[in-house]
Image 1 (cartoon, rainbow, N blue to C red):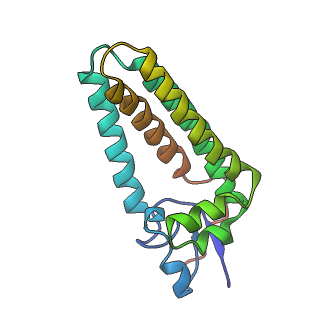
Image 2: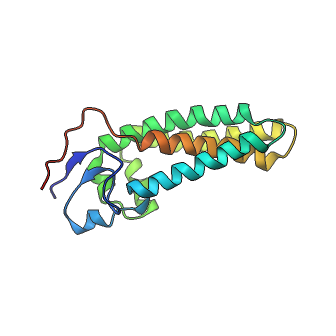
Length: 165
């Protein structure tokens, strides 16, 4: 298996950003790794977060700020995990396999743990806030997801480019 690192989110549809491989198994990798799918997810999470910030009262800014901050850290951990185990992620064809790939290194395990911790703290924060608890939670969580997806899908600095065929 000849995997060359080219950490850029605009890889062809169906391949993992950051990895390039001509093997059929990698070309069937998990669809949310595709550049286009990531851009759609980022747009959806960002749009819902913006809508929540504009329309909800009382303002969910504290929960959204916490969600965005923890999403930033989780995204950085995911980037580190992808960079640490690129071959394992290249072979992932389902969400379960992606989760298993994250569990192969410390940064990935920390990203999984922080996702659960952030969700629990966002829920507790929504309960403490007056107003609509489910929507307050959603405002914080979509801010988390927006930032996590945005950061984890950015190109890696200093990665060698894949030679053109």
